[in-house]
Length: 64
Image (cartoon, rainbow, N blue to C red; front, side, top):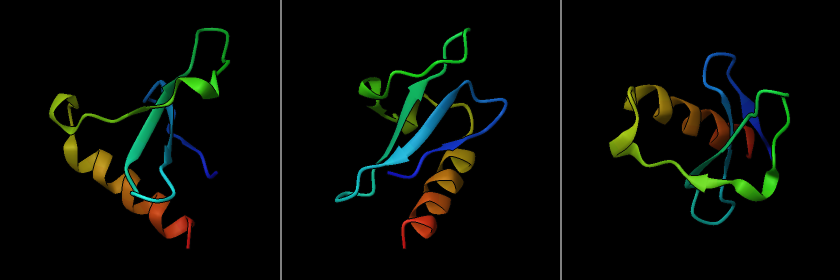
């Protein structure tokens, strides 16, 4: 599992290995992450869809 973090996002991202769907998990105030809390990113609810799609493309490239 490859995980990426962007300083201003407040979460970490990964991909589903089979579907290449983008998932996120929140980073808590104490800088911990619960890896069982990954949920699919809902493109309809994000502020910058282009930014999220760029993250997805980066993770796909890293997985090759």
